[in-house]
Length: 191
Image (cartoon, rainbow, N blue to C red; front, side, top):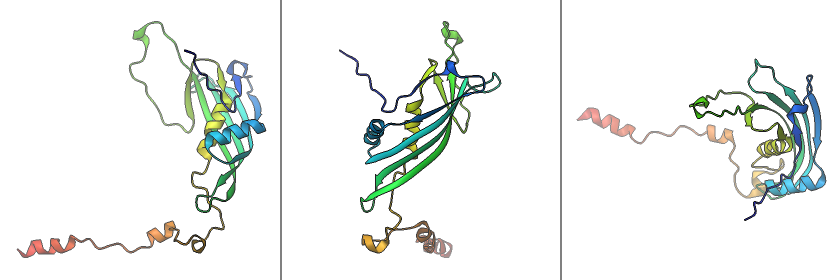
């Protein structure tokens, strides 16, 4: 039986050992075929542009992790409006950080930690086995998280749709309903 290897649509392999002391800056730009493949993966009509400015840094022994990847992501995509199904242009601009920590391999099972402690950080911590990472896959994953799950045209009005779009103000402006059991509370004291 042959093993099917899944290829990433936007693969950009980077060897962390090549990181310079002052940091290494790399710009990754998706070509037309990669944009089409990512659009299919994310079930959206089109990705017009995908660009990521990355900086790889080696961390000091005082910091958590071994390497840090800082990314400034820019993308232009087209989605379908959830109300009218017309095309909606969307611009995405995100910054994110990922800390890469090399897994420490030990030959003795007794040396392995029994519990793993996690702390809340603003950045993700990835435990890696190899110094080669696919930065493009991380960029694609963060792009998918940044896509608006309910895109809507700005000019869509309630009247055009034939039903009411409830806004947050509409929900909060409703008067508080009277508790139906409040009548029973008064009866309890009369017996």
